[in-house]
Image 1 (cartoon, rainbow, N blue to C red):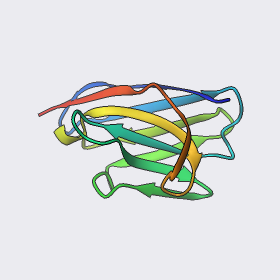
Image 2: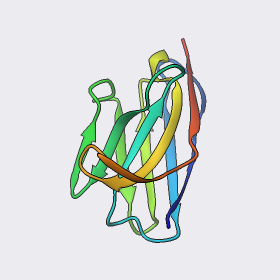
Image 3: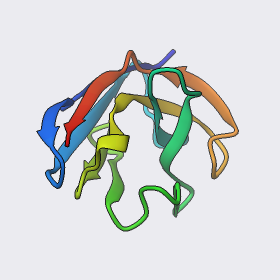
Amino acid sequence: QVQLVESGGGLVQAGGSLRLSCVASGRTVSTYAMGWFRQAPGKERELVAAAGGGSTYYADSVKGRFTISRDNVKNMVYLQMNSLKAEDTAVYYCAAGYGRIMSRVDYWGQGTQVTVSS
């Protein structure tokens, strides 16, 4: 069993930056693909970025602005978000699973709110 806890969300002005962190406990997540999803009000949850097997994936909407990284020693995953836009406002979830685009998710975090004011 893996527990995922996100932190780092908050309120930021458009154009600003935030860094989300996700700490995993229970077992190592080094063998999992790790990803960040987000869900805005009234919208479906979508994959934002993922990292695993030496490769990364980014949704087109965040390419060039967001960077995912992981520290398997610390059992942590990060999402650096720059040049934030109002449309990035959502609850962001950390996930552990399989596949380049996280086609299977075994574990979810509880989510952290990111609000970007325009």
